[in-house]
Image (cartoon, rainbow, N blue to C red):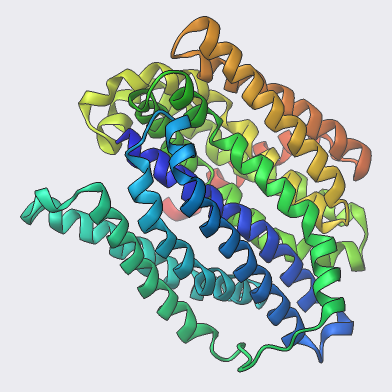
Length: 403
């Protein structure tokens, strides 16, 4: 499980980094008035960037994968890297179509694409688990991933065909402008993605892949907790771009405070529930043999209410035209993350990465809040008020429903 967790962490990281290079620049430039009649130039520039980045990753995996696998004390990763090159190739059209649909607010179509991609993989695993369990080797899991990604790509292509152009239209100036805007976002995604996987990479390098399995289970729970934040961030970025252009920073501040307050109102009770019933959630996700992950889960889960700030911080900074600020803040928080986790693991044992994550989360929150307060005037008190208002709205809705 530790080997598979590392493989997933690395390839998820690659996809997240690439999305930072593609998504925001493509959405921003497709919405700009000067590109209304030149949208094929924007699409083409994005696709070429996609192909170049994917080629670079493939080269690194092919020639340097064995070095990286040895550094993680997991040589079994190298054969997965070699087959994973096909995963990277299939992701080229999938990611391009996904961003194109997002730029046109076709979130339902993206939902169907991901439902097919992830649903097919999950269903296949369940079927083989019941009828042919020996088939589920690590190599065959990667093959199932490739097949499910292909199906998801065909679904997205069906919905995106009305927005696709039939030929590439290369334009050097457009590529330069998009890259100039996207380079800081790309760097930001590198830092934030590496930061989120810090516990797994450091524990693999310092201890073993067995410990990675425990941290990965906690990471899966955190990923589920992050779903509202990610969904809101995806929708809010184009809205913030529009709000900044038409209404100014006050509207962006309102969106930030209200959305973060609403998300925290969902996460706070859920965090408490997971803290009180950790055995239940561990059994569902991994089984009773992974109960050793419970202390890690209880250390970090109550601080998950700080995570919405980081997701909304990034999209807000990019939307108001400050990707450089986002870049430096994320670099600093990544350094804090790795630094405190390394110190924790080195001096307090295998739970050290969890202690380091808590310290890093608190410091990162304070840094981001300071920047948000200085740039668009975000106030913590307003965010808390929106949390309480959300509870009142839930209560009134339930009252009406029971009546």
